[in-house]
Image 1: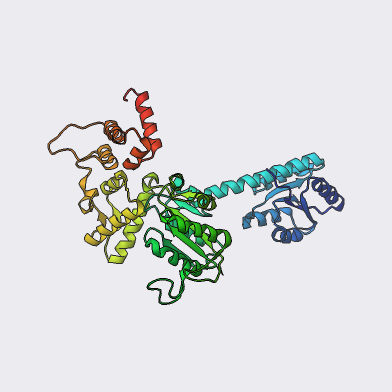
Image 2: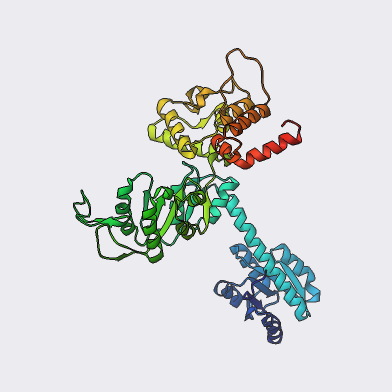
Length: 463
C-alpha cells in the first residue's frame, strides 16, 4: 500500500524536464520537491525527508554519484531512482551497485515514471517492516523483562494499555511498569496497589484517601493512590479481588476522572492512566457475578496475556543466569554459570510459581552454596527430588512436568515417556470428572496441549 502523500525529491537541472516530471507525479497526488543542483539536493535530503529521490547524475555543480554516496553513507531511509540517458546505462548500473534502487532511461512517459516511483515506495515500506521485525526479534530485554522467545516478543509489541492477565509470578507488575516507562507519563509517578493484599474495608481509603475522622483510626487527612498518581499511572494488581461495591466507584472514577475521599464532601479531579492486572480469568469472573461486566469492558481494551515460564522456550535459562550473576555479586559469591545437568533439570521442571519461584530458587542456591558453577547437589526442593542420574532426560522431564514420583529403589523398568504423560493426563481427567480445562489447570498445562496429545495418541492407536 503506497502512501498518497509521499514526498519525492526530483534532482534535475533542465527546467523544462523538471516541469514535465513534476506534472507527471503531481497527478498521482505525490508531493514533489524539485531542485537543480547537487548542493540543493543535499540540503533537501534533511529538510524535505523524501521517501524517493529521482536523481539525474549529470548536475552542474557535482556528479550525482556524490549525492547517492551521501544518502548511502548516512543510512537515510529513502529509495534512489537514477535518471539517465541512453549512452550512460552502464553508469546507472554502477549506481545501483552503490545503493540506487532502480533507473529510468530518457526519454520516458508518465506511466513509466509513476510505476517506478510507486515500486520504489513499496520497496521502502516493506524494508521498514522488515527492519521493525528484525529489531523486535533481536530484542532480548524490554523495560525490565528478560527473554527473546516469540511469546514475549508478542508482549513487547502490544504493550500500550490496560488489562494484564497471567499466572502468579509471570511479571504483571513488571509489564505495568514497562507500559508506564514507554508512555508520555514516564517522568510522572507510578503507584501500585495489590487489591488482594489490603483488607476490603480499607481498600477504598487506599485508592481514594480519607479525611480526618472518617473512621476509627483516621487521625489525619490522607491522600490515596489516585491523588499520588496524578499525571502518572495507577496500577491495580489482582483487581478481581476488589469487592463489587468498590468496583462501582472505580467505574465512575474511570469514566469521570473524579472522586471523593472517604468521609469527604469535596469532588477531586485527577488525570492518570489506570492499568489493571489479575491472575484469574476475568471473563469467567464476570460470568460468575464476581466482577462487573461494564467495568470489564471499560478496562479490557487491548488485553496483554503474560505467558507462564514453561511456555517461554529458553528464556527461563537466560533469566536464571541473570539472577545467578546478580545475586552472586550481591552475596560476594563466585557463581558464573550452571552445569549442563543443572540446566537440564531447570528445563524439565514445570515452574508453577513462574519467575518468582525461579528467583527464590536461585537466591536459595547463592545464599547456601558457593562455586563457579551450580551443580546438582546444590539444587533445593523440589528440584533436588530428581536428578539426571536417577532419570534419563525424558524421564526427568516427565517426572518433573507431570508431577509423578521417582521410581522405587531397585526398580529397573523404564517406561516410555508418552506412557507416563498419558497416564498422568488421563488420571487428572478422570479425577476432574472429564473436565479437561480443569485437569489442564491442575497439571499446569493448557487444555489445547491435552487435546493435541490425545489426538496424536488416537492417530497412533495408543488411546
